[in-house]
Length: 327
Image: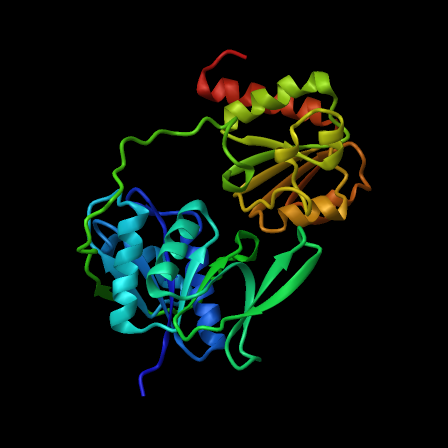
C-alpha cells in the first residue's frame, strides 16, 4: 500500500526561498507525523537544485518542482499543483496564510472541489475525518473544524503557528519534476514594484518597531527615523493607538496584528499579555524600557534597562557613521 503524502507549498522570492518556506517544510514534517504520511514540498523555481540545501535540514522526503521562469501568476501555480495532486493523490495540501499562499490554496481547492480551512494552528486525527484547529473571535477562542470532503485535505496554516525546526542528519529530499499547467493564463502581470514601508502590512514585515506608553507624540519622529534606517515598520500597543501615536491597523496583539518578523524592537512597552501574544512568533525581540521590572523583559532575547530615546539616538548615530549618511 502506498504511503500518503503531505505537501507544503514553499513560496519563493525571486531565486531564493521566502521567509515562510522552511517553516512550511517543518509543518509538512509535523503534519505527516500526525497522519503517518510522508512530508513533501512543492516549489516553483528556475533552479530547484539550488534550493535543496536550504530545505534539507527540515525533514522533507521529496521536493516536487516545476522548473519554469518566474514570476508565474497564482492561477498558473494553482492549476499546476491541482494537476499534480490529481495525478499523485497527496492526502494534505498545506499553504502558508500569506497573500500568495491563500490565493493559490483557494484556487487549488476550487479546482479540486474540496474544502479549504484557514488559518489553522494545528491538526488532529481524533475524528472520523482529519480536523483542524483555528482561532476565532480575534483569538479569544478556538474552533475544531473537520473536512466533509474526501482527500486531499486543503488548509492554510496561520503564520503565528509556523516554526522552523531543523532535524539533525536529515536526508536529502528526492527531486521530482512536475509539469507546468497547460492552461493559458487569463491573468497577465503588468508590473511589480516595492511597497513603501509606511504602507507595508505589519504581518508581512521583516523588521518591526513597537511603541508603547513610554513614547510621547513628539518622539515619534525619532522612531520613524530609526525605522527608515533599518527598513522597519512601526506598530505598537493599544495604548499607543489611544494616544494617537499609530493608527488602529498598526496595533500589535490579540486584538490587532500577529507578527512573524525576524526582529522586533519594543520601545517603552511594558509587556501586557494581550501585546505579548502578538509577538510570540518573532525570531528575536529587543526590549528597551527604563523600568527594570517591566514584563516585556521576560520575552526579550535582549533587554536594555535605559531611556529608550538615548539608546535609539546612539544607535542612529552609529548607523549614520557606518553608512556615511548625515544625521
